[in-house]
Length: 179
Image 1 (tube, rainbow, N blue to C red):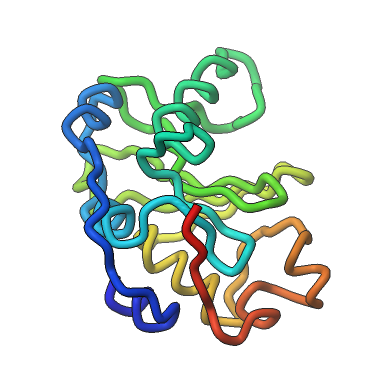
Image 2 (spheres, rainbow, N blue to C red; image 1 turned 90 degrees about the vertical axis):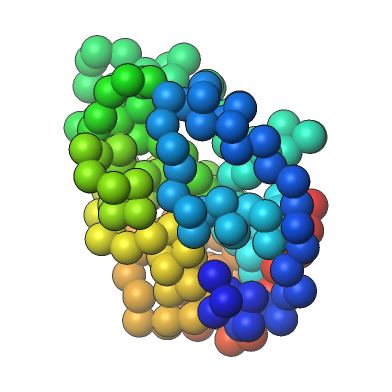
């Protein structure tokens, strides 16, 4: 978390987040690093490309609104998140969204029986339906996207394409813009 604050030059805010309400509806605790991220940055966009889903009064970048919407379209067939399913309270193995890009790529945790801090990050490149799995926290994943030009994640070219490459290559000095 400190690394993200340092590289973006952002002064941490103390953005109130209704964690008890969010976690009660999801039926699970959320990773601590993610909670710190939402409280420090609030809703907004990193490098005009990556958004983190937190509690959002506008509902545009709201975690529960996104999750409910995905859950509504999930079914028992080989749906849009195959071979995965969207998390349902009381279950494991499902996905909880935590981030998105301007080109609609999506970042999730896979809910496991293990500690929430060890949930893997899954990235979906929407155009090709390519999934990638990362054994790291959401904040580490975000930090790598923003700072490591060699870090591979299945992004769809949008702002990054216009700037000729991955976010870390295209934007050598990461920044955050609040919503």
